[in-house]
Amino acid sequence: MAKKAVAGFRDKTSTTGRSHTKVIKMVKSEKTGAYSFREEMVLNDQVQDFFKK
Image (spheres, rainbow, N blue to C red):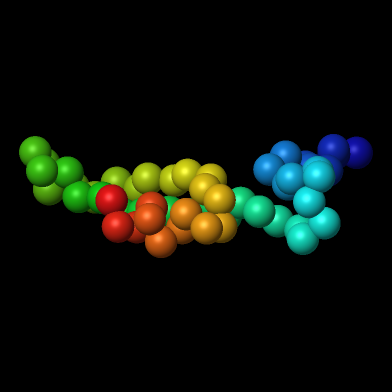
């Protein structure tokens, strides 16, 4: 039987639920012109700042 994956990014002290969001941004390489994806786990308050970079 397979093991069930457990999310490890939940704040155990908070009762509000999930405090992190997985964000994915498409970034174009200046050398080749190809696109790549940048993934990060950020706090919910910092999601807009991630996309402004």
